[in-house]
Image (cartoon, rainbow, N blue to C red; front, side, top):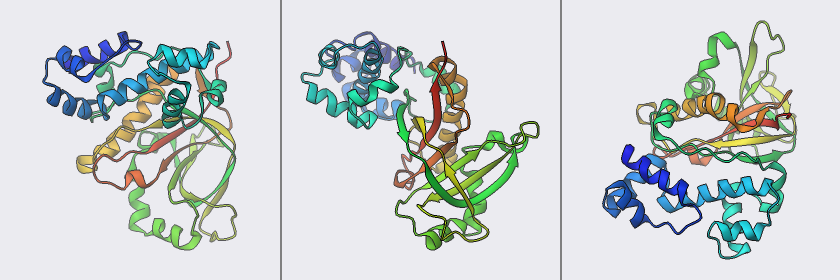
Length: 298
């Protein structure tokens, strides 16, 4: 771990310089072949993909400062505005121009493998989230009414799916609703009774109307919001690895990211997990966690 921390620290200190896999391998003390393989296990992506993401993370902070996009692109090793824009859209899902409104002046903190393992026991480093504004949409699903005391620590852990799978409710959702989009939403609706801490956890699908919903199904609108979108690190289902990655990501969000982010949870909004085809693989499964956010007041 410490060998790889040296290479990660080197990346942070030389983001505006040329970085090669060979140089990173030398710093960590491994052959290039073994470094590449082990880096992927620890970080969840190839070395140069990680370098590119870190450069873009710093570029986002500079977007907030109003620097010209072409100057930012050149500073971080992108030869053209178009090349920078293509890499940016691949990571953040929109153009640098569109992203300016969500940019934060906070410089991304240095990745620390020891701190990371406090939250996760599987491979993959959690990076800063992307941001996405989603319009209101409707959900049809099955609810689980519970309380913070009973199930808060389980939130986000797929153990809650067991009941729905055993009863065949998930399959029934698709058969009954026939949604246009394939993917399951797990939503936490905030408690109406704050003292009791009760809340509703819903597994559902997105649909335009509620006409197909049966009497035992839960229907609701998810309000428009701007979300910080976290992707869990790649993990295997074996030995509950995927569940651990999800639970660890939730802990990271609230214990590590929020206190240092410059953002706070948006009031009267709904957080949710989204499970698409990427979580179907038994090896290297990932999913997204959407947290509604607003910038903190100065």
